[in-house]
Length: 316
Image 1 (cartoon, rainbow, N blue to C red):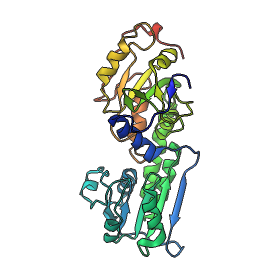
Image 2: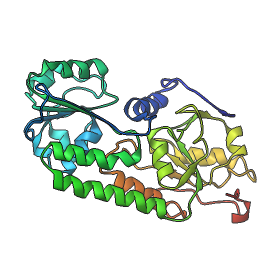
Image 3: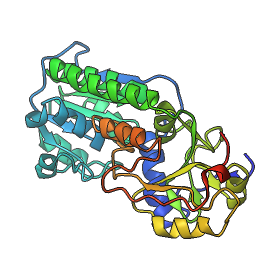
Image 4: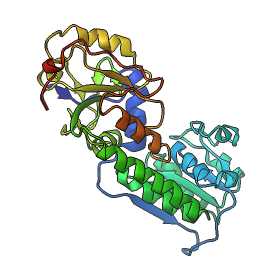
């Protein structure tokens, strides 16, 4: 793609923070969800009473469906809901401690695609004795409701999971149906240089499903670096930036291009976590996207005031 190129995920501290997170956790490039269920004996088991979660989104799902009391261990990154912070920690998302996991005596460990492959392989191989390993790899936004239902049923909370999954589906449908459709958007993981996402990524797919047109959506590079020249040639109508990015600095940068399509473009700061954790809080994410389709400002979100007349905005 002209004006967009690949970038190593450790190009800068911010790139490491955002791009490694996105690529490690949710670099989902296929069309269907993958669920792998390993049991020591190869047969279905009763609802677990001691669960270890190896991903923040899985921890959120477990608590949302009412299985929080069954969770006995989480990663250092699992900070929502508040009670998850009080659970024993088993190490990082990428490098969980097998010794700590074993010491918690779980009867179920739930994992996902970005977890350390060697650690998951050892868990599958029976290091936990009779405990089961359930690995879920949602590949698209529309997979999440099914993952919630499946995980809820496995931990003995099927009815509660159905309710949560239905809420996610309803929020996605509402966001997709909210006019105007096909508003051109740029999603920024990093502000200097501009690092965005293609539609092949988890975040890109969320915006596409909500009815936005990603200006770099067709990039063959999942996390392209985008040049100012590219944006001048293909200007977005709204810019969404991860909450750590300095939105005031972005506005100042765009303001230099008065009359060229970028000056006055609304810049919206995304709420933390909800767009990078495929789980129940996608309800909030989709409501947020729906609110900004027509330029509405969700409470507490800072946006730019357009400085150009509406007629000067690029046509759809």
